Image (cartoon, rainbow, N blue to C red; front, side, top):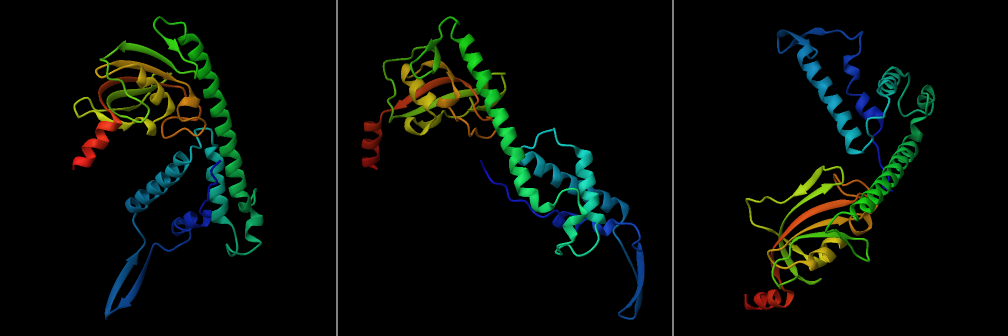
Length: 261
């Protein structure tokens, strides 16, 4: 599990202290022989900066996958408790003014993230297993020894890829709920991939069709991205790919062509 490092709340709170009540809105000074009035930022600029501070917090929450289950009233309370706290921020007594000692931040954050990850991972695993169990009963679906399921839409020709070959494909990847997480652009050239550098489900599955073939792959988590997930693919997600195998680059032929260059 990734260990998160967090900036002290002081770094953010310090940027907000200027807006606290009790500070004069403007002062008059003599400068270079002239009398000038220096003012605090106006309401419009203050509102803009306040909004951007909110976006900064939002980025932090979303980027670390905290989800929507945080208590935002508690977030506000923590912010205001910090801003209103007395004394020097680096003094031992400063942290004693809060409901929870900020020194506990990393431990509690990582405990929270770990618990969410475990729940999400096990939930996705159970949902994927149930999906594959039902999917195996559908017409044309083949389940292999590894647990991969596939459905051939078009066989293609006799030129099939091996484990070390290169393939040129168009594809669409979805989750079992239908959410699309990746796709090639059908208006552009096929995507080039090396069979020994893709997920195991692809390496196995694409060997069942030839050039010009189309296949639907139902990939269990252990043949995909497993517990780590990646991007929009959450931990232990079962994946579905619709793949058109446009061309196969045999490894011996590609090495020969490289030697000619």
